[in-house]
Length: 113
Length: 115
Picture 1 (cartoon, each protein chain N blue to C red):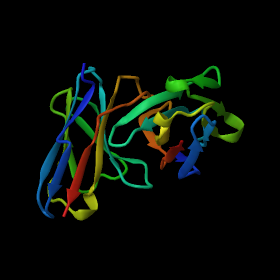
Picture 2 (cartoon, each protein chain N blue to C red):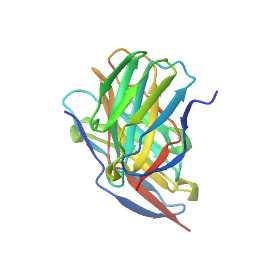
Picture 3 (cartoon, rainbow over the protein chains, first blue to last red):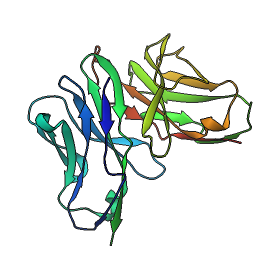
Picture 4 (spheres, each protein chain N blue to C red):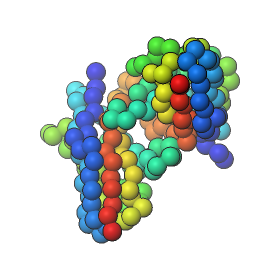
């Protein structure tokens, strides 16, 4: 079975500062990795995904994530946060022989002026 | 192109009442999913479907039933609602990808309260 851990429940960051959200997974083979964002009262929107190839992937809204196999991690980063980035972020993991995804518990990001 | 839509957006039920949540997608996706979202628990899969006429249990299926009579629609039913089913329900869909994970596209959610 695979599991996904997002160690940080809540992060507060100043506008303009950098942001890093952590995601760790447990799965024996190469995982399929996703980051989703959920704005208040909205559904989930895909930010980026990793299936194979370059381990640094670029997404929408200026986000990027890096797959590190040795650390079983897929951390999300943004160099300079905007107030509109305040939201809840979910990491999700899939695998090559199953169409289902497992989601982490989420990290809520608050942006202060 | 509306993507994934959910009906209704909000609902309040009394314990023991029944209801059906409707999910519709216009992307011709093969796979569809129902999740519930509870604080601190992320999204948990209730049921899913890999094609018209097929359904399967997910992680937390008890108390729910589903049907996929048409490819574009996926219905989630609560036969006898309980307060523990108070949650936000999300529907998602994804394209055919063999037995491989792929991007799931989400609806806006249905907020259900059971009194």
